[in-house]
Amino acid sequence: MKRKFAKVVTKLPGRRAAAVVRDTSKYLSPSISRYYPLVVDSAHGSIVRDVDGNQFLDFTSGIAVLNTGSTHEKVVEAAKGQLGKFLHFSYTDFYYENLVKLAEKIVERVPGDFEKMVYFGNSGTEANEAAMKLARNYTRRTLFLAHGGAFHGRTMGALSLTASKPIQREGAFPLLSETVHFPFPYCYRCPWKQTFPECDYYCIDFFKEQYLEQFVPVKEVAAFVYEPIAGEGGYVMPPPEYYKRMEFLRKEGVLFVADEIQTGMGRTGKFFASEHFGITPDVISIAKGIASGLPLSATVAKAEIMRSWKPGQHASTFGANPVAVEAALATLEVMNSERLLENATRMGKVAMKRLLEMKDKHEVIGDVRGLGLFIGVEIVKDKKTKERGEEEAHHILEECFHSGLLVISAGRNTLRVIPPLNITREELDEGLEILEEAVAKVDRLRRSRRE
Ligand SMILES: Cc1ncc(COP(=O)(O)O)c(C=O)c1O
Picture 1 (spheres, protein in one colour):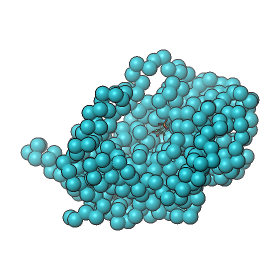
Picture 2: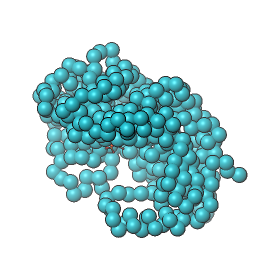
Picture 3: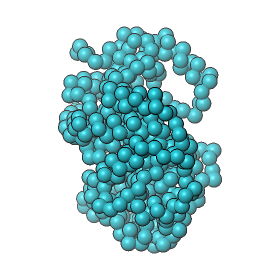
Picture 4: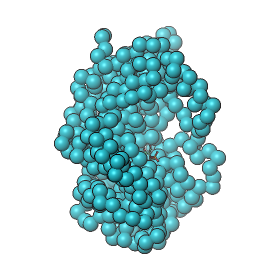
């Protein structure tokens, strides 16, 4: 099929890309793992160009950051406008006008019919560090509850909550010992071999019996920190009433901290994924898509909780950079004027339908799940045994890359389909076409190996 958007004109990696990859391994920390040698030169909307003139369709959004697409003209214009005014004047010690405007707009969008306040940082992990410190300060309790498979960041506090891959914690101990992990309700691979809905949320009974009644003194739990839908751990949807049924914890004084760093900013078709589950968190962590690519994060809490902090208790020199703040204001404006939530829902339905059809056709697709443009495609070696298809997933990513589509994985064997929220139907269709060709090729190969 002739491609309109994806145009690979060199053997990959091209000459310039290969040189950058070589020098990267010489000068940059080896702690970063990459899927394939994409060396970005420029990016606009859902199209990315590399340094050798190849053109790719973007199903990654720079890892769920570029929700308004790359270099949206309104975001760029807003950032440029601020560049000539002031680049920095630390909100740790001074005031600026656009920051209050942004805080006001964010609290309007965060669920909850109560007064809220915002703490600004630079990254997701910082937003969660702030949430943890705040939860302890307000409750005067020490423990945290988190899910197995969770990803909350890579600094020591947030890393203590993270449990999606052992490598992320390797060499980092001791972490916060006051963190208790319990299984995420991963219905496709139910840890208790139950089936939903017949199980009647056995996961919650198990949590009560094996945790709260055996070794976790709930009166000492400051917060339950959770991603409404597991992200890095494999794009896993909990069953619909899960969080509502977990709300019994609130009666025990446990704060609900929703990490919406990946699920927020419209990715699931609602501003925050919490809205799909009908829960109102006490604290929400926001980052990634908030400023369309400039570093910014926000920890939003009930005002009563945030007012437990006294001046000097928490801050960050670079938090709330004024250029990022302008980009965030423009991002919110674009989300509104271009109806990105509606587009995410509409395009999400198109993608979901097509991916479910692919699942029926191809043995290597075990499960397709998600909301809006937050979609996971779990790759297996065999649909019946559900044996994880890690090599197959990797192979599909590589095939896509070589055909001009950028896709990455989550967890061990799930592909994530997370294009910009303003992707067009034509771009989406072409990307899905490439993805299907890659899936079909890997499926054929798997079959021929078995025969
Ligand atoms: C749910 C979630 N929380 C926290 C983080 C950490 O964000 P950052 O890498 O900006 O520190 C991520 C990053 O992928 C994330 O997906």
